Image (cartoon, rainbow, N blue to C red; front, top):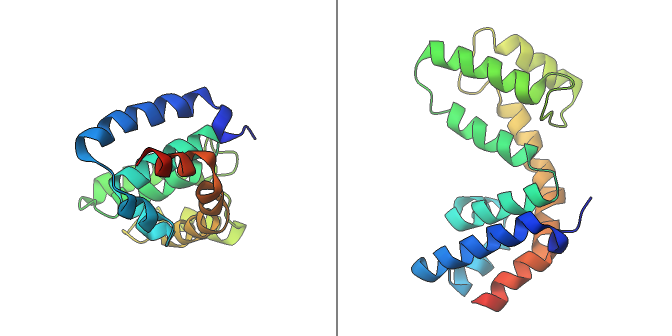
Length: 156
């Protein structure tokens, strides 16, 4: 996996965010809140964007993409839209060898496959919980130790 501080993509993302941050001033307190929990990081508009850029720089952004898509899926009210979106999510993230296949167990995968025939807002909850746990135990601690996260403190 490439290191964050050598990724050209990360550098442009951070530069753009620095410019925006100067307008809205990302403060030290908000940055330090991100280290308290993944929930706090994801609840922050800037925290989410910076975490996404970090994961993309490591070529491991499928988990956060899936998690965010599930959050949007829960807001769907129309059953036709829900069915269509559930099938797309399954095809893109859940089915074996999907383009952005997430790491979940076979039982969860099969349950989701059955549930998307008549989807409800909770049909991806088990997979979303697994993915959140993976990010919390792996990606999030790496982010907190990254040069990019430390550089944000230096810039405040």
